[in-house]
Length: 269
Image 1 (tube, rainbow, N blue to C red):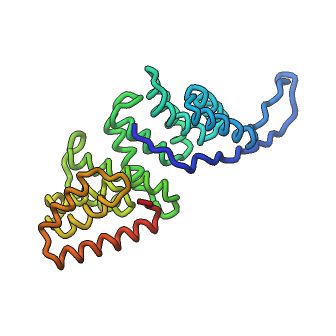
Image 2 (cartoon, rainbow, N blue to C red; image 1 turned 90 degrees about the vertical axis):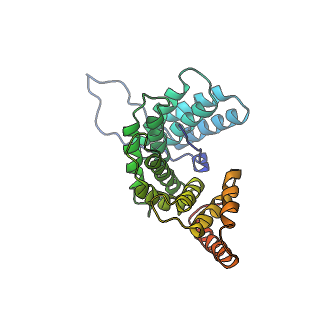
Image 3 (cartoon, one colour; image 1 turned 120 degrees about the horizontal axis):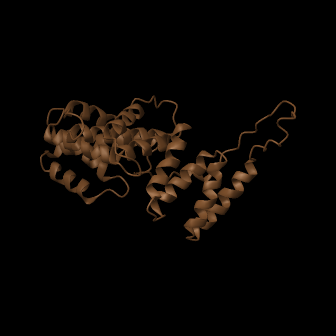
């Protein structure tokens, strides 16, 4: 399971106030519990956050789990992330998957990606790679025009994972043309791994004609991403040797222009 926690979950959402109507009957005289207040969700979040910062992950999980029990999607995601990354018990991945699944059912796109990825790899759940790919495909087909940048990024990760499978051909047949299409979409969302893989497609002629100019453009973009592996720069530098001075200068300008476009849509690195 590969889930990256987003800072947007640092602000708990307001709890929904449920209005109840009707009178008590002789058959039902027990009081109906009130909906949780926003202040209660905030209190649990603050306590969980403090415990997590202090390194008390077990206590933090209890608070986040209470948030989840109050139907807080943020609580579900926080609990899942903590179980996945910081809690080492025999069932921690299974419990993380359950929380992600609950959040995914409520429309959280990052959790939908986590569920698809877990199904594909069999992490915390019985492996069903085809179902995982189907869920990835549903994400990849999402209309991103109204999504927040963080959610657009999750769609890009789904596109990258699908493309990698079309290249590897472990579950579905090889389809380099489809992989190239998906990588082109993901790369323009600022997914560094997709930028690198797109560079490989241009260098090796996978799904498109081999073109060292565009291979350099995308390798260069990938190498500029924050925390990029050394391989990204190595491929860029190797490809640069295939270009003459004028072509290299134009390719560098092309990369700069694409990077500016990508940054305008949310990428920081």
